[in-house]
Image (cartoon, rainbow, N blue to C red; front, side):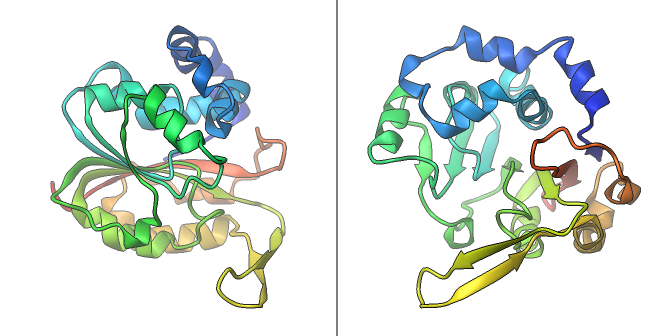
Length: 232
């Protein structure tokens, strides 16, 4: 486990390998994609990307990789060229035509525009990744691990939580109801994750109780977690 901190971002920026790779593989057709902008503008996001995808971009080849909610950037093409790479994403940050444009620019990577809960894994995967999704955007962390741990050799997560009170006013799509969603804090996140402690590589649940300065403008904390999957 690793908590993204000012120190870790500072050490990463001494060799910003993701930033350098983005510049090397620049494609103007992708400049307006939201995920591409986030990656270019945020050093903490590039650090997280390096931790979750770095070996897939620079060293390993030929793996079966399932990316849940990872979005499309200029680095998606590299992932699809080096690996059997599948992306499951609702593409909520892409406007009209952007999905098709992105797929053309990235040589038509395998994208499944759907909720991961409706995606049925075919065979097993060497690596399954969920970046910037759980549990703040999607609180189904427990369900996610129940489904995908058994389908992978390794699961990699970036988990977002808030040390202070945070909630959102939302509207149901299939009913005339207003819902209030309470963002998870470190205690709740750790409590769910502890159920899978035997799978976690180098567990350190104390990280969820630390009161470190956030490296993000909205005050969130991000913990990086790797788990051994059931295919080992």
